[in-house]
Image (cartoon, rainbow, N blue to C red; front, side, top):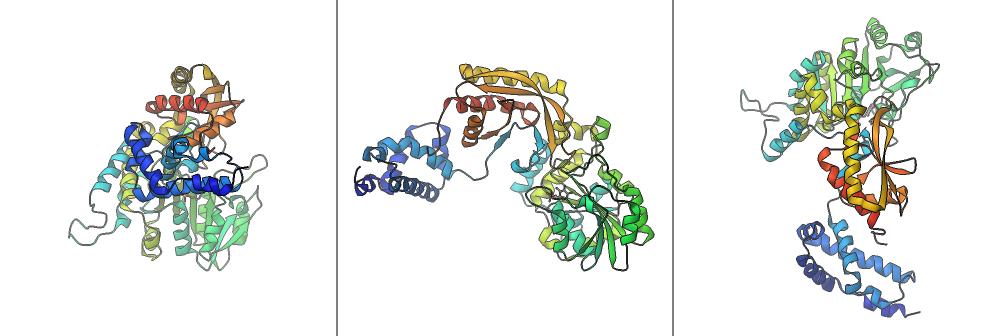
Length: 483
Ligand SMILES: *Cc1c(COP(=O)(O)O)cnc(C)c1O
């Protein structure tokens, strides 16, 4: 057993390490080296310290026996990989081969080219976000997209906030604070990340008056709950949750009629909220925003980055007098979007003016609508590329499978797809999954039938060669990490 103090002494100083690092990097031409050379110096220094701290811990734990293990020569390539990961930006590109189109873990929607262009323009320039172009004075961003929202949804007016949770908060605060709102027990949903819609509502000081049971709520249940202190009837899309079998929910039209008979408003949180009629494309009934408005909802709330396929945003459309009151709520100042969100959202919404263009040009919509027979040749191409890159390290097969919309839309509804299934020879699919998380860009897929499966539905064709090379690296490099 070597003396630990001699081991600690073998650890090189930060300055020596930095110098060796700089020398090594300047001779290498790879992407990782270039990235480290461009990274802020303070971050690289911090990374080097963190690396040797981790080594000191190993020494303390008795896991290092030989001082030579701690020399710069022995550690350098390991140190470079560590620093590369440590000093790279936290937000990274992820290639999503899971087949889940709207994946909250991966930032939901990929934007249309038009939206990316608009983002670029808004990022590089000042904009008229709050400039009144008639007077040159102060305008308001809160009416910027109202005309477009009116045209697209048939509503009288519209407003945009930071996300749909903010939309729920603003609406509840404006119309229901300190009063009661009637909601079905079947709609008190948690939508992932332990985020519960009723909690957001209650945060505004509204008392939720729950009616019916988890699986059945009747119009008379709502009617019986309406009292002097009732402010609104609330409908919440059940998103990722669905009751099957003995189930009864009240139609939006009936609910709207009941609300109006009592001089109340119907607030309809659609969650995903689509402007595309997916029913016409053969997917099960997901009401469009237009339908929700036409059925008499007074305010309809939906996300910008779920089925709409835009940036994170919350859209509120409905009666002009109600939207006007929302604009006057001081809370709106804390919930407003920035120019980047407006730019990307407007460009996305404009595509919907021509529904066919939206179906083809909004990636989220196009990917959900992609048919199995369109995906199959892409799966073949991907399989070929992976086989070419990975060679003998795996077997590839094509497999029938199903993708999902995700994002709480069409709960669990399977979209038929063809998977490119990678069967590793020397390792397990689970091990592959873990290694791919350690590579850059990160590639995520899913494990099915003891294979690591890639679903072309959520992939960009131009990423195929990159996907193939990542898979090959994951099959080749056994243990990368601190390891
Ligand atoms: C997703 C969802 C929300 C929250 O929307 P965000 O845009 O994620 O804030 C609210 N209500 C329902 C029903 C949802 O599905």
